[in-house]
Length: 255
Image 1 (tube, one colour):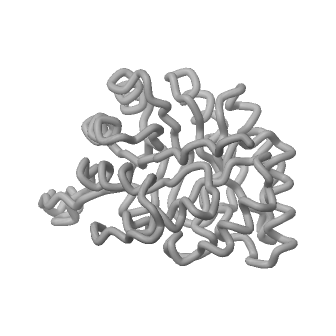
Image 2 (cartoon, one colour):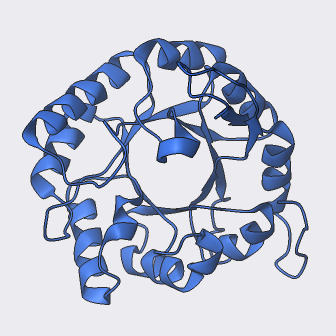
């Protein structure tokens, strides 16, 4: 009997120091984005991507391609920008891209997805949590997963439709069962370290979290006032990495 592959830890990072800290603490893959706390993440600049790839050359860096916050139904000009961003990310050394687009009636936008996968030119493609906006009915989710598989998407990121992946375990488990390995399933969204053993039990290929901490900083009236920012907390990454192999019966208290 073939032994199941170990669950991968993916950390969402926003800067070079965060990328280095995440890898040092055990992250096996990175998602690079910006404005994570404020927007859920948007596309980072090419300069940042190049610097992160240089800083962690042996770790896969996957780039979020999302032109704005808000919904995932995109105008033609927004789609054209995303195609350019995917191509630029690949040229800059990204190991993968993270994309997602929906139709106005709540289905995966196959036309947009086809263009983005083509622009990726063979690097891995992750369909992000636009998947969690889809109708929760089994037929709708099954149809979406079939679309992803047909277009060669490598993995889908999902919280199981819940605000926190730890509360969406039943749907995550059903998603894993449906795709049968044709598309990897990565659990993410509000993941706490204490949730990880139960998430691993669903059979996901990876667990995704930001492992971030807030940094205070007053930018004044022209810099967002006292909004501050977030960055990677190396201690949380290390705890998350340790939790991947922790038995489900032991629930850590670290968040």
